[in-house]
Length: 307
Length: 265
Image (tube, rainbow over the protein chains, first blue to last red):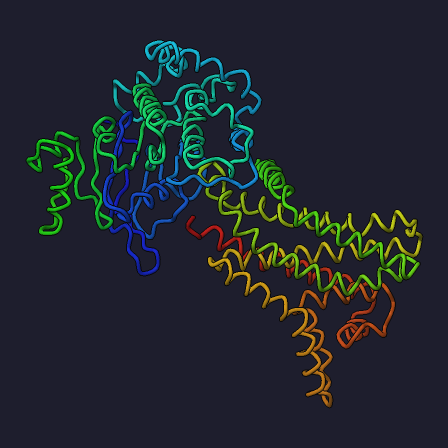
């Protein structure tokens, strides 16, 4: 399996507080890797280290074979949905979308024209939506990369990036399906928490990144938006995108996660598929397996996870 | 590439800052003050001379307070933009320009428009006004850099604000006292060199010297001004003072940039 993210021995302390203490983690292409663990176990810190927002004290991270070394270009292929969205006070969602499009060098004027396109396909049924959506823009290289394995480069994976630099570069499906249209011009500070979270979700997918970091994405979303987002995640995974997801919602993990990494005290205590987790802990359900995992750590230094 | 990126960032920072009433109020203040001084005093040079002390005290105060608050408020911007393919140094320069440009513009517009309205800009006033604008912008840059440094090093907003006010008091009010004390204590020794060094160690003094040498009012020059005048002479002194102000912007700015590169968001 091609590895998108490979982290080795990541160490990070905030003052006396040791958050990550030698974290090893690999993320494979076109999979959803869930990072679970109690509060303050270092999940968000790890996401921020991947983004370069936080500098690790030690360890090494490669994303698609290239080490993170302080340059910023690799972030063009990452979409980030932080836990609590924070936006500039006086800007509206449309300003933010425009600004980031401008900064990423993606044409900013496509906002009006292309919204109707992908959304249309979606409302008329998921099967339709998939073919008319991102999949149609997939370069043949992706299919190749998926079946044959070797890392062909993050940049070649996502749809449209190699192709035309036009509206196809922007994925505005979520703006439509999360009904953000009416509030695009409202200053973000006036939006409710849930609405802000929707803006946040739409933003993460907007530039068709090949790697998405979703930090408790459905927290604060109503059930409809939440399932819309989950559908989107599954569709985009099928289209070859890679996800790192942190969540406390077990049903969500059951539905989405290909692999699970259990983080505790800054170390990965388990990494593997859901079945491997159930098998290893001898429990029938994911919920019980995780509970068992949490109980175990009190008594013994848990074994390292699957190969 | 980087320059255009900085410009893009400045554009959106300005979009945010311009919706802030502080900057507008700042411009209105200078407008009203200049207008009143012109009505009372009449001629351009006299009004500008009265304005001088306000410029030298108020620009540092407003810039360092507003700048420290601004730098804390910019965290939202930082997290959002640093998750994008944006270099930290690029963002830093964009944010710094987004602080200094609106404040400078507000000051320049606020002072110039009343002078123009009263038709007070004649051959005598124009160079004085030019120097006032240069000195004001330089002070904005210096105290903007100090604000950015404080905002970057101190995470607590109130503590940062306290330190900012402390720095302002130190550089404007307390420093004069120190200089006088040194002058008194060592009056029997040749201390002109030391006094010159003390002047260059304070951006507010530098700006004052820069202005007063232009106005040619030696009575207002004070000890340090007289020393600079005598040791360096008119144009050389002005050049050195301008250079000193630049150093005062660049050095704190570089330290702030270093802190910005290293910090966790």
